[in-house]
Image 1 (cartoon, helix red, strand yellow):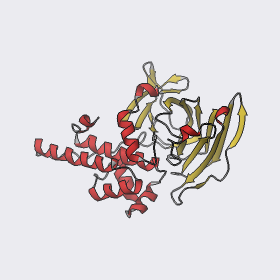
Image 2 (cartoon, one colour; image 1 turned 90 degrees about the vertical axis):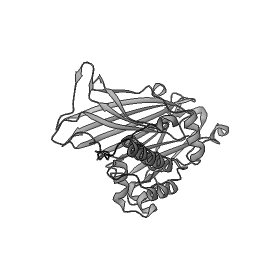
Image 3 (tube, helix red, strand yellow; image 1 turned 180 degrees about the vertical axis):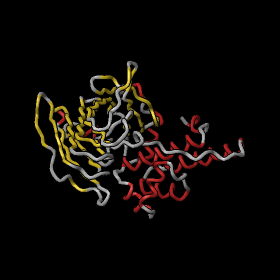
Image 4 (cartoon, one colour; image 1 turned 135 degrees about the vertical axis):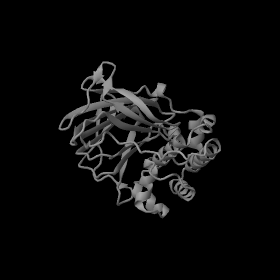
Length: 324
């Protein structure tokens, strides 16, 4: 991984920097505004950094690394960016073209999530995650792709240990076995960012047999799923509201034999983490203890984090920090 980093272009280094910054901000459950305020920057500055509209800066990188307790991960990405710029100057007198930020979906599109239903199920060794979203296109252009993120952090309270862990045991596409469907059709997917502990993926409204874009005024369910071993996950599950959402539902399912307990927090653009306003509803069914939490019209950019502990397996909880 390190050898590859030294050969990347300026544009690739900038994308890696933006992805690293976004990943650590999400891991810490901070909004862009909250991070900017913690660093002493204008609230819009973090957005410019994550979108690539502003090139990585030394002072920003130093403060972001400290504010997010990222174990020098963001600082390293800035160093990689500076090295890439130096190599570029040596090979060409022509400055690189400015980076164009990716359009989120399609020009003129405006997606609304009518229902966001996420389920995490643990079998004692690995987590199966299934996400279902009812999307409505309220814009003027067809939507042809949808961006998803997969971010893991095994030791969130110890970034150096976590970084070392994923360098030695990177998250791979093979183990994720990502699948996605829409209208009963398999969706192709395309990697946007591929890091040791962070993936960004475009789900495409197409497959080898044809295309099925989401046209203006239409609604459609999409579903995607992946699997991660508990050696690369942690005792938490976070949902971020990136699009206007009408209903958000989260369900966690654990073996009853582990005696799981669950709690949650909410973080918004204007407030730090606070307890969920309503508790998850608990039921036991077929050897599983299920916890379901639902909210309507959640605030844009809000983050909801559910955490848990297995009281019947404390010896394995010692490696799992309470906060991600």
